[in-house]
Image 1 (tube, rainbow, N blue to C red):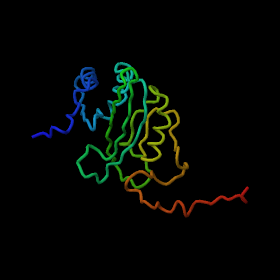
Image 2: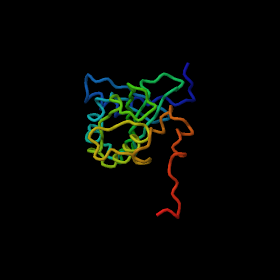
Image 3: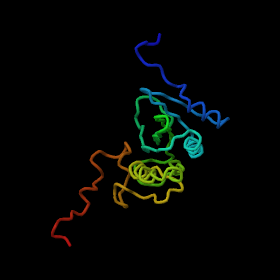
Image 4: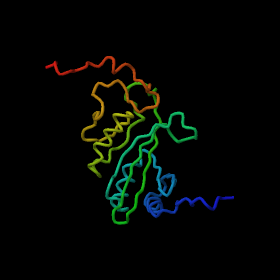
Length: 187
């Protein structure tokens, strides 16, 4: 029996119906947690769905793009990595999340480019995604097609890994010890 004190999931969010009706034949998943609705899309469908949400759904602001590493997550998940887009519609005071799961095809301990960890950039829809997509690339190694300037943003260009991956050692791999210390006497 359901607990009456817990709120019911809001899986009837109107945006779910809009997307489902506009993309017949596509597979979507939906989830709700603490009143926040999330649409889970396939990587190949991401850009088309995001364009629809901006133009047809009224989500005129991309608040954030984040990466998540689900390695060793206690519950089963669709893929190891996820990229989450936080969309806002100011007219309706509505927030909506879009999530894409990716599974690596090669070991993730290094910086090798994995063909399975690519998504289409949304910088053509929301130019502000440029910096947040760069952060997801730098920290997780997920690359974005058609990004205008995809390079590291928080670490230096030759950094030997992607530090927010869960298989990256907490104390690093010697980067601090090998990095040249610059003090005031250096010119």
